[in-house]
Image (tube, rainbow, N blue to C red; front, side, top):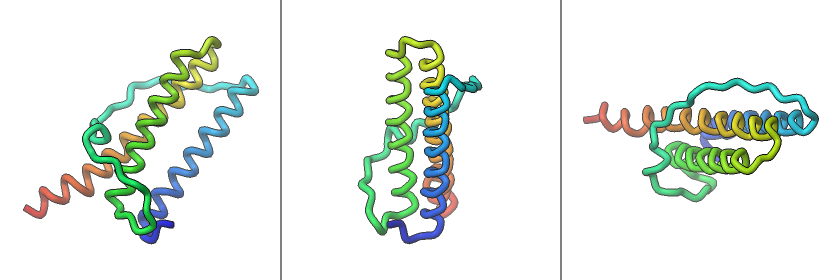
Amino acid sequence: MAQRPQTVKVIMDLAVEEQQHKIRLEAAKAGEIVLKEEEVGNLGIADYVEDVKPTPGMSYTELLVLAMKKENRSYRLYTDLAAIAQNKQVKEMFLRSAQEEAEHKLRFEFEYDLTTFQARTLKK
């Protein structure tokens, strides 16, 4: 439903990454898990911006807010699932998925910072 090419690209990139999550979950189910572990930063922007509803003509800023919020919810879901997982491999797979969601959110937060906060500062 997005109309701006830049918005469509962000949505399509995110869809590809989410498809990779599905592949990883299927691989975990089959017993083929590959993990990497590293700390992911957090700007905390998603915690302070208001929720937005998806609309056909939403702005790029609104899309970024929506994406940050969704990635943050996905992060919490995977973290919660890892906390209750009984199997070590399943727990690690959920933690890795949580890490990827945190990386996605951080990328959207950086983009939001660049396009929203810094753009306002440069105009002053």
